[in-house]
Image (cartoon, rainbow, N blue to C red; front, side, top):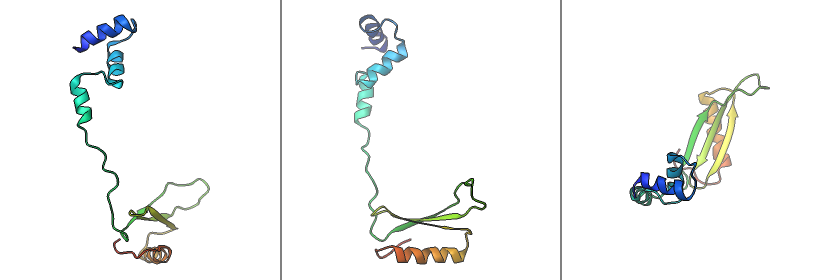
Amino acid sequence: MSPDDRFAMVRELLNPTVYHSGSDHCLRRHGLGPHRDRKAKDDTLKHSGLKAFEHGYIHIDVKYPPHIANETSRGYLFVAINWATQWVFITMYRNKTAANTWHCLGDLKRACQIRIRTI
């Protein structure tokens, strides 16, 4: 059935004040759209979920968070995520220096209960 025929049927049987685009959206939402739309919807790839990471893989980001009204200076967030277990370690330092990075890694090593293999 053509889109114009569907529109005429919806307007005659269901709602005489409906617009063409409104009837088309309604029919598609309820699975009554053109065959090519239904076929394309069925052929879409399913979501594969999270990528599987091995235990000990730690991802680290350094973020510069937005300014907070009561704070006089901003700091840097060091965020470490173990993707296998979704475990998160967050620490904040005023400066992004090599010394603070080493301190963060030491704190991470003490806080993490699994053996870190890859950063």
